[in-house]
Image 1 (tube, rainbow, N blue to C red):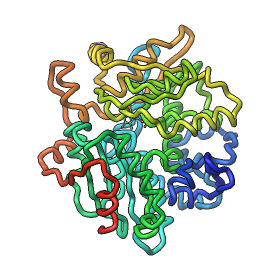
Image 2 (cartoon, rainbow, N blue to C red; image 1 turned 90 degrees about the horizontal axis):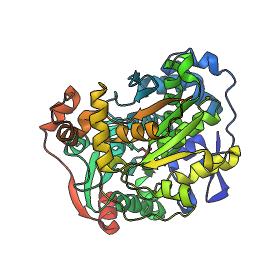
Image 3 (cartoon, helix red, strand yellow; image 1 turned 45 degrees about the horizontal axis):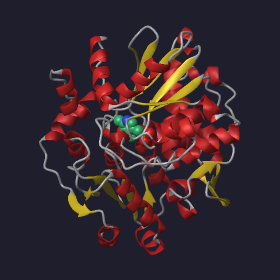
Image 4 (cartoon, rainbow, N blue to C red; image 1 turned 120 degrees about the vertical axis):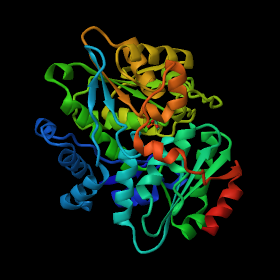
Amino acid sequence: MNLYNLKDSSEQVNFQQAVKQGLGRGQGLFFPETISPLENIDALLAMNLVDRSTEILSHLIGDELSKEMLHSIVSKAFTFAAPVKKVTDRISALELFHGPTLAFKDFGGRFMAQCLAHFKDDGRITILTATSGDTGAAVAHAFYGMDNIDVVILYPKGKISPLQEKLFCTLGGNITTIAIEGTFDDCQAMVKQAFDDQELKKTIGLNSANSINISRLLAQICYYFEAFAQLSVAQRENLVVSVPSGNFGDLTAGLLAKSLGLPIKRFIAATNENDTVPRYLQNGHWSPKTTIATLSNAMDVSQPNNWPRIEELFAVKGWSLSELGYGKISDAETKVTLVEMDKLGYLCEPHGAIAYRELTNQLKDNETGLFLCTAHPAKFKESVEAILGRGIFIPEALAARADLALLSKEFPADFAKVRELLMAL
Ligand SMILES: *Cc1c(COP(=O)(O)O)cnc(C)c1O
């Protein structure tokens, strides 16, 4: 697999290099040089998740990883299901939260960790990532206990849910967590700064693990196929997929699935009040505002850093951005939607509810809809219980962590402090 840097197409790397480097020169994102459609979609749809995902990933990655090796990596990464559940006659939910940290980021995080562990040479490497909640948990769990790999996670203090925080800030061992006095964008900016710091990068073997790493996106492509495989022939007709979006990795993966030939009619990019992309699609101006805290905090991103990949994909495929649906949902609408869904017999959480609402707002009569449920409702226990006015069930994995002490350090949004800690690891 060859990839080029979107900021400097003269920089070309293979899959292994892209996974290890994360970002290219000038903080450019890597993008696949060719995306050739799969020829055997029907046969693929008949396979199980692990076998099918191995085939799809092998098609993309090529001979850098043997099929046997990929199969072994995928079986260690995808150890849980992604079931599709019916919500109304025409709308289904794709539940991506049955992994160890109860969010879709387990798919990408675990696949990336397995790839890195495989590609790594003898030296130590340090994974540095910024999280608005769920990436951190997925990455921490995916790397926890691995030899010669240190993980450092920055997150905005007080801006992620208490249970979310417990899930990854109680591990210790090779996992260091830092609560930053600032926003997710501040955390992300510091990660980018670290990658521009050649001395630091070399000394600690820096690697990123947020949604900019190409391996995560490749893993995420696989569950769009999994969803499609579970739909009936009738449900596959005119399928519209609504994606709750923050950093836009999930939507990028969905669009890549479509470009590989998965017959999805169109996508909807659903955001909360942090609506840089909906405003851009509406008026053509890219004008991020200050990030605001919402109920769907994993989507509190005003500078979505996967967006250049989406633009590139549309350009390469000759698609028009006007075909991409979009919309933003306020916290007030999110609350009403959660109550409405609960009455339909489907317990959801704020991120999934935003995707559902945008789907019901935009679905046409001849279309069927699928929306992504990106996190387990229990991860947002406090807000979901307050909105629904009743208690909800907490899965064992989460309940067990809730009583443990937080091990995070607290830092100002000051790169010098973070750098010092990284050098001292
Ligand atoms: C990360 C996350 C999102 C946003 O996904 P992106 O790929 O960053 O757009 C949505 N919902 C949940 C629960 C998340 O953790």
